[in-house]
Length: 231
View 1 (cartoon, rainbow, N blue to C red):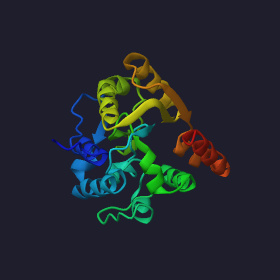
View 2 (view 1 turned 120 degrees about the vertical axis):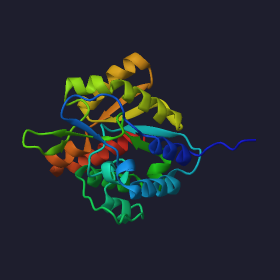
View 3 (view 1 turned 180 degrees about the vertical axis):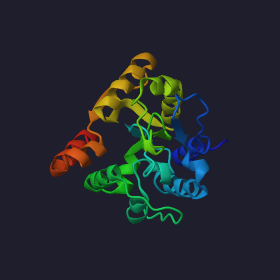
View 4 (view 1 turned 180 degrees about the horizontal axis):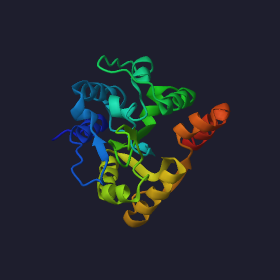
């Protein structure tokens, strides 16, 4: 009898086959860290084998799309190289990154009960699982969200739907999902109305928003996350 693939094996296969070949509006570009840096593929595999090598069903926490400094480098959502090494125990030698959302997420994970306990229960990823950048008039490339431009969203929407369905097929409990960011939730709601992917949508403030605008009240937001996730 063929042995069932573990959550880790399915997540690694998903990331290994990630490719966006659709159209994009002018001055937008998609970055694929798994193609751009061979070590990203290595550390991503180590991460999933370490925390997901089982067949346990998990709840889904939905981000927006990776930033260049978080999963855009490590291949692990909301995880910069600093926390990948210090908290997850997986060093990365080819890059160094510090990402503000990662700071909040890992403080919240610590409050939840640590990485092993957290990742045993939750899977974090994005409806558009690759980093998106936009070229400015000055020729610089900046991070953007999939919803920052109407034409961009229309271009990537079908790919997002396919990605969400693939995330679900890894072994996710879809009765309720946790969405990070209110604007993100508006767009996930549009997709969910059409596709009927998830039951209850629980919206939480995005870690970047908390770190940038509400850092003095950070503990309140950590408590809010824990109370939502532990219900």
